[in-house]
Image 1 (cartoon, one colour):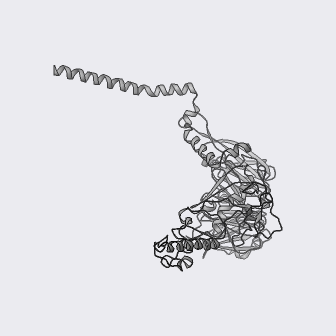
Image 2 (cartoon, one colour):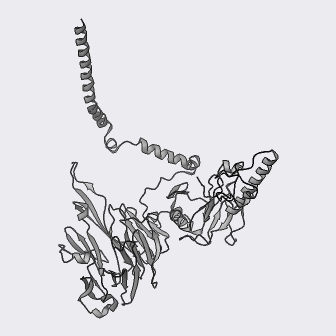
Length: 558
């Protein structure tokens, strides 16, 4: 195991003398959760993040001296390179600015790093010097020349500094060195920043429990920057039978751009989950909810029901991106081209009208139009409400449009999701830039994309809801996992993190099954007795059969 005791692009192994590279992208993935969840942690709460073979534990703590636990106060005007001295005991603590070679989204450039190990090059030189001393002592005592700890090749004095000529391990640490026998233990280093100040409760004003759904919700942006969610909450059986009908809670929720709840509608529906929330679309001042039993038109400002109708086959094309009403015209896809059904075609740019291979058209917030087409590549044409055109080229690896989704915010932020990658373009930009990449950034196949003015939203099954900045910094997380109970300082001091982990593991292993937990004590004993009587009857029959066989054997022998 290789402890990472310093923020750097490479880490030195003191056992074999080789370097392990850690790219800035890996640091970005590892520190995204700590930077977001750190200010929200309770005192003494420890959480863990894992990325492939890397593991990081983090908690929130005050800056204190490791020797006497006295508070440390770094000067905001310090250069960040001089050691930080404790005013109480005089202990020195390594301190430096966050390295500019590892930019992290959501972390200011003035952040300080405290408590790290020495630089890898300096540590390697110190290890080489220690190995040289050990070699000199061995030569005086008549010992054999040192060997490489990695490939066992014989080494001369030059290899102690230059490295092994056979395997290239550098800097070299000889076997006689105490560092090779005892790898360094992990140390705790701190990130000091004003952005990591404690936050009481949630930073967003969304009430706890609103983000609760089974499948990924349907999402539609509003013209003012907000958005509407249509989701199914967890279902429950209607009767204690083997075959039951689920009763679901269909939730339609409208949020302001600052995540304040504008209106909320809850309906109880029964039947299979897949037929209860088919789709959602926004048409300016109206919101249309599509379901199996029909569609309902709501007021975008208040959520009041305006009308209800049976979902006809004529409305399905609008739901699947075959028709759209934007820029004062009604357009539809006709044999791979855009055809104007109603309105003045002069409102659309000529490049959009002449586009071939059109696959989807969408109304954008504010009345713009988004056109996704495939002809000599995949193109996304974004027409803003004033008629200006922006064209983006998308190159999926397999050339298909399966799983490809796009979203545009009210102010013109473009986001595209394909192959579990999210790329964004800020207003005025003509090229998509990477934002999130694959499962390491928690982008799943069922992710639903929504572009906001300050970043992108991702919604998944199981109440997953997160918002990221265009550079990939985590801005909001629904935090569906239960928070630990607040414990006193004395209890936290007596109980280390490993002990809490072991106690939780024992609790999970000793916890009874769901069926036993739901039965009272008397009913549990009755069930146990009913389950044992077949075994008792079988034992009685086996005993009788044994005695009868023994009696017959004795009679035959007599």
